[in-house]
Length: 563
Image (cartoon, rainbow, N blue to C red; front, side, top):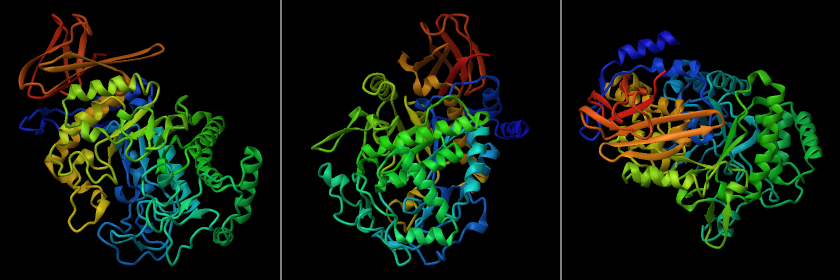
C-alpha cells in the first residue's frame, strides 16, 4: 500500500488546480497522510468525522454476476434501473485505499435489504428499487447488492482500515405495491391519505406519496406477520429460525408485537451480527418520534453485545451512532423541529446528529460568517450533539454547485465548517449532476465517474485538493469538533482547538491567500519558535514575530504542529 501511495504521489506531483481564477499548485504526498494514521493515533470523534455517502447501486460494480435478479428486465426511465453497483464494489475501493486517501473515516451507503421485485411509475418514469428505500423483506439482503457474507466482509475490511460503517435504515414505509409485491396487511400499513405537510399529523400519519404504504409506527397494537412474508421464509428454508428469533426478542424486551418492533428487531440484527457502527435513519420526521429512541436503545444494546463477543475487533469505545434525516432541518433551528402545531426534539429521541439542510445556502456567505455561526450553535444550543453537513445529496434538487463550477471552494466549505462532513459520492471528482433526459432526482444519481478520475487531468486535480483537505480534517478532530477563532482578517486565518482529556489538537488554516510570498498571523495561538508544517504545500515553517511566512502559489494553507 505504501509503495502504491508513493507512486500516486510522484505521478501527481506539481498538479495545478483552478478556482475562481486562482491557480494554486498542489504538490501531492498522500503517503504522509496515510502513514500518519499509523504513527499517531488520532481519537475518532463523530462530531468531526468525514462520512462518505454513496448509492450502493451506483458506486462500483464488484460482482457483475449479481447484476440481474427477480427478472428485473423491464425498461425504465433514464437512470431508474439497476446499474450493477454492489457491496463487494465498496469493499474493493476500501482495499484500494480510495477512502483512506480521501480522509474518509465512515461510509454511509443506501439500504441493502431486499427490495420490491417489481417496477412502478410514480410520476417520474418507470423505475425499480435500485436506490434501496423500498423494502420488501428487512431480514434479507437484496441479491443485486450482495450477500450477508459480502456485508460482513465489508464491515471487517472497513474496520481494519479504521473506517466505520453506517447502514441506511427505513422504518417509516414499505416499498410500493406492484404485480410482484403485495401490499402489507391493513393493520401494518396505511395507504391513505397522502401527506400534506401542514402540521404534525399531516406529516406523520400519512403516506409520503401515492402507493408508498406507511407503517403504523405510532401503534402498539399486536399484529400477525404477513402471510406473504411467512410463505417467503418457508420457501427459503428459514421460517422456523426467524420465528424462534422473534420469540426470543419479544420475550427479552417485553415489547408488544406491534409493527415497528418487528422492524426494529430485524434492523438491529445487523448490528448484533456484524458490528455495524451506526444508522442513518431515513424519513425521521414522518414516523412517530418514540420509534427512534426505541430503535437507538435496541441498536445500542446490540452494539455492546457485539463488542463483548468480538473484543479484538472493537475500534474504540465510541457508542452506537445515529443520524436522522428530518427533511428540511436546519442548524439554525437548534434542537427542535417545528411542525407548526408541534415541536419535536429529535436529539432527545436517540439521535446524536441530524442532517443539516442549511449549509448549501450558507456556503454563499463568507468563510468567517459560516464558521462563526456553526461554532456558536454547536457550542451552545447543540452542545454535545452534532449536525451532518452536506453540499450535495441524492434527493436535494438544489445542491450548492449543480454545474460543478466551484469544486475547490465547495471542498473548503464542506471540510472546514464545524460539524460532521458528508461527501456525496462524486463530489470529490465533480461527477456530472445534469444528466440529459432524466426526471427528478435521477440526475443526481449517475454512476461514479471512475473513468474521468483515471483519464482527465482536471478531475485528478480536483480529487487531489479534496484528498488533502479531507486527510487534514481526519487527522485533526479540531477542524470539525473543535472551537473556532479568527486570527487574521486579511489574509483570512483562523484557528481550531480540540481538547478531550489528555488529548489536545491545535491547527491553523489560511484561505483566500495571495500568490507568492504570504504572511499568516498566528500570534496568541502558536508562540515564536514553534515549528509548524503546512500539509497542503508540504512545507516546514517556524513562527517568527507572531507569524509564519510561506512562498508558493497556493491560496490555502493547512498548518499543524511539526512532528
